[in-house]
Length: 491
Image 1 (cartoon, rainbow, N blue to C red):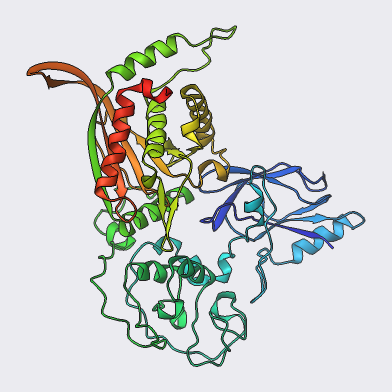
Image 2 (cartoon, one colour):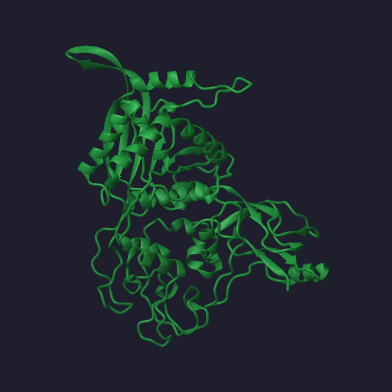
């Protein structure tokens, strides 16, 4: 039988990808492990490796195609002994989108270079066609929904409920049950992760179907029925909803036609908008600011860089930046204050053993946060060289998922832009993020005398669910002690 090659899900948030380039042509032989295509996600460009031997009989989706849904057929591979022309002809006649039938498991995407075994074994994202309400309006996930319609209980039909199967509801109850709950697979997963009974959530989708944005609203305590209440029962009195943002039409109406150019959002900008909106709406932020005297750090940096060995071309083995010291100091501070090296979950606190520091890197149309793993164990020169390599790959969109997923905290440094002070938005699942301003000479009073000192303002954003005020103060105090006395980073 021919082998269908499908658009893989390369990250938990990916619904569509861009087929950047085919590295094999129709009729070419393909071996297991051969890189056959490059796929752009919202964050990186990934290499697609073949997992079977055969001949590339038909390319269904040409290179340069944007917004290809996950699990859509992109090519067909003819196995040994099969007629390549017949396989190609059959692919032309087949529908382009291959989506799982109701109740059937989704096909596994082919593993990509750099992905871990756990990621290869994870089930792929459900194709957008399986959950039409969300697929039609992905950018509306983060906005407060309009008033939901009164749910009805339609007669059971095959495929209703977003792939739940023809005979069961969202909980596996018989289709004829009175309290049938219609919900999308994504909504059920999000509700389970949040510890919310899906049956208590008011659905705003077709026929009262619960979709992902309903779960996000339910997390804030809105749109929830009383425990045990049947679907269709009125939800409890909610707190005031966040005011909805202006619609596209309302915004455009404020400006004259021809006075602006509409630049459509790419996948990265949409994901950034959704994640940061969810962060500020669901994470109770508070901020702690201190001024750090980095005079000793500047002197140590100059001495260390001057002592760096050089290769035959005169290039130094390393060149430390202030940011390298910041990463190391924050990593050690988290080890000294382990109660702050955590991630919040509804079930309990994840207390991390290592300091995995994400570092915000600006790139065209957005930013990404590659991670320096086990930063507390690495030398300053190792951190410096690793960050240069990660930043270069980030700007070239060549990061692998394990390069930017996870982490225990992050650093956002705008000092090189001359920014003195700012606050950063926490990137879940982190509980903190450190905003670093520019280092500059300022007048300070010491012993009753005004002196010049090289100061740098830093602000720690904390998730108050996981890090209380006093704990955050201890953490930023530990960071200040290390950054002001860099020799302590070597002990």
